[in-house]
Length: 208
Image (cartoon, rainbow, N blue to C red):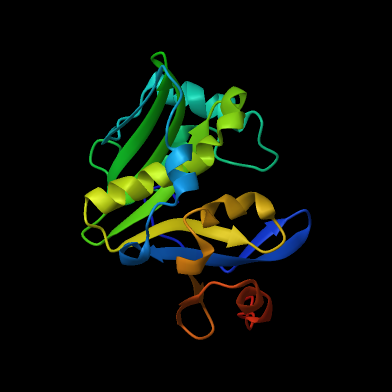
């Protein structure tokens, strides 16, 4: 969250608490399926590029377009989303090595995926896109391009964030493959294979 690392077991939404499960993928087990490779073939005129993150008016404008169609609360600006809570860092000297994947249509920025990279892992931070391009599933595309970067960098783990029981809109993070997905069991204190049964039967941690 901003420039600090956080974790949570629950999400409060619509006057209720919902269980959260964090995900990770072991890249040694990941291979692109034919369907995923097809999804990554962009239409003519589209381009994709990864570069070090630098905030810009263009990125901020895309964030505002993306934010306008959400039915849940997010930070008012991309700068706040990425650089709030800068206790020991700043936008000029960030705490993390952040990169952005840009998808463009005839030069126009239509989607962007930001991730932090470390020695052994990549952590997905945020995906934003123009709702006018929703038919291309840009959220899923950006996850696949993050996985492509992870493979090229020889990364061990990819962390796409969390899913929320009862809110399928987060389930796009399972796109890499449920069979190679792991979830963190807070009570047992370790990573276990993902399964619907595992999620539904997992012991709930205390809500302190």
